[in-house]
Image (cartoon, rainbow over the protein chains, first blue to last red):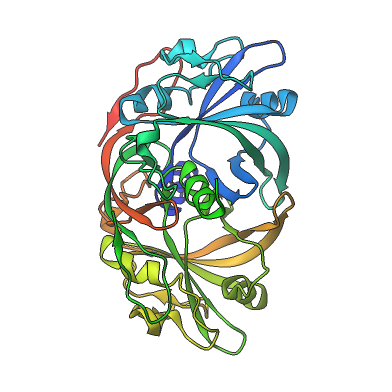
Length: 200
Length: 200
């Protein structure tokens, strides 16, 4: 395998991923927005999300801003935002805001200075808790605690589950492909020797 | 929020996730199979996948087996497997194989003793490299290196990208909902001041 083939191939092996726009602000007030497909649930209590970031060998504005300010936002990508979201992965110079470059709109939250994406239908504000170095390849796992969430309450089921398809959130595969997930089923809690029920 | 509501709500916030069946074998030869929705791409060279696992406070056979044998498999879930895959989350006793309990079929690979899922259309064999403790809540990030991959070569694009929709891989949301992702677009590499193209 040549390097480029390997990157495409291995990036697809992990399966469908969420696509998120991560908003951050530098110490001197410049907004940054970057697409990540490596957000992972860490725990519900306290509510923690992880974010895998590539080695900090070239300027990684998101990592720098999180380290400097301790705050960032995670914004779901809906189907009408995929081109703009993908375009944030271009290597803009630090003085360029990806908001201006892609036409997405920054929105201020109540608790954080980091920018949200106004077009996003589920936005999450986080305070940085820890960054863990992943030794085998020098990547980083950035862990933050959720301090603010905004979404349409009609999409929250009575048991707390969120209908992400109703929010039109997308999923991603590999480095560059975007998908609209269609629901197959929601199942009851699994127990030995009891058949599953499907939930609404 | 009560605890159950919080668990459903926070688990859905991270967006669509991949659903994978993780196969492992105990030191004394018992097969284990468990669904995880926390597999994350760590790097392409070396090819590394991460897996977030809950605190090891109750018996976690997968973690124990990986620690004991250093081997495990990650198997994509396709739409006809979602009920059996979800059922593996029931708390079976250690002497029960989730393969037998759910009707999924174990398959031996060439390099590892850990079982693959015969029904899975993309299977990955891994050797354990490192387990990182995530201090804020006691979860673990299990990192493995890919040593074996099996899939239909017709689903691999000439550039290395894999068409996961052609493999019928599913995505998941929250703890219990499964989805079939429909492709919206694949985009060219993003560059400043150059419009995106869509790829086949």
